[in-house]
Length: 257
Image 1 (tube, one colour):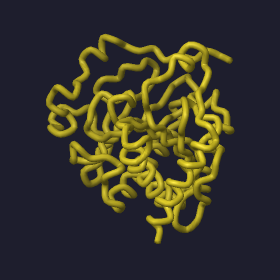
Image 2: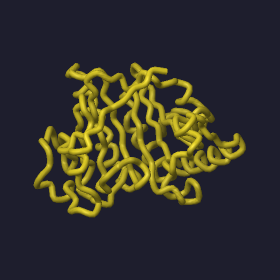
Image 3: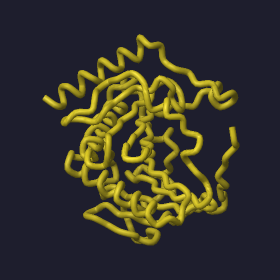
Image 4: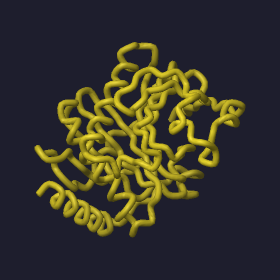
């Protein structure tokens, strides 16, 4: 497999604020260049672009410092998804980047540096971020079929990381509200019920395959040595996956009653 890398600028990284500092997304007096805003959502250039040959932007989701997709009201969450996907499309249309990625970190093990809720929208000038993806990682044990109530949800049989990953799929952008609702419910499940409530972190990764849109909801724990050293993934026994599926399916059915 071709080795791909991103060059990280440690000098810039050393200047970034942390959760010990005054939150720059609350104060908003020294943000980077503001590209657009809608209500209290702001699309802004990342003031600390640590990756070379890329265009790094952020979407500040809300003025609520302790907020999260799992906790927004349904209307606000749908508006956020519409805003994120609109800006993603804008970067893709400009043709300045070989690939554009949209993702979200939440919690101390997710790779994020600030608590204030925000998503990342990054354009890579020369890198195809999707080149190594295997479509089988988006398939697995069915939790829920796509319907007028929710998106299609599966649990990966071949996770990108380890153990449990949830896939949310819609046929096209017209179903974006259903994607937003389903991801919101999954985010709440991951933080409050999954693994007995012991999961404090997760990632959202978004993908577009022609018209189809997928989101991976990935609970985050410490990465295993097998994965780091040898690229060997640990997966749950089928019985455990079936238990998770049944619990999650019940949660969805209760939600849509």
